[in-house]
Amino acid sequence: MQIHPIIAVVGPSGAGKTTLIDAVIAQMPEKLGLIQSFTTRAQRDEADALWYEFISREEVENRKRAGIIVQLIEFNGNYYGTDRPHIEKVLQDKIGILAVVEHGIQTFIDAGFNLKVVKIEPKGYVAKLDRLAADEARSKIPIPIDKTIVNDFSEGGFERAAEELAQFVRSI
Image (cartoon, rainbow, N blue to C red; front, side):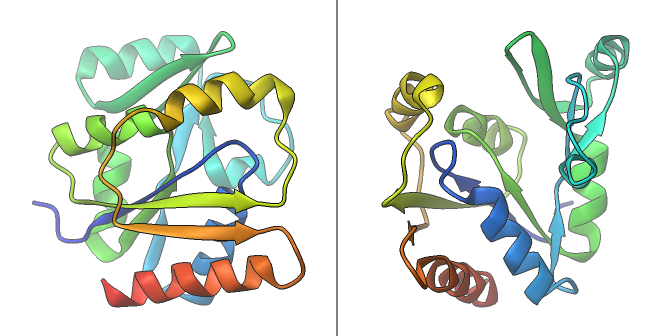
């Protein structure tokens, strides 16, 4: 039985989703828990370990067979996913929060989780050219949105966006 909801943060690549999540978790670590994804890609730096559990393709297959994967996508030859035991562990004590792509929203809803969807709309940033087509395609996927936050890349914009996200968390 799910006690707490999940805040699913969506938006284009480079919009500041993970940076905003980090800032809000730092403000209220007793209330929010990061829902960590797993991946088969190589770890890039130490901070990566906060966001991902690095596993083998064989382990992904084991989790598939066990039926515990809630969401799984393949991108650039690597798997990215989330599994039910990790999610449920976080939700026992805290509101869960994660960055997720739009087509992942429905998989969480179908799995029975209570999602609160926050869309981050960047303002004043330059998108990575290699991500534009994927971002545009994902933005057309219809998803329920509970809150839209503009992350303005001008002075003070991030702080305003982080405070708006924190206020949304407090309202839950």
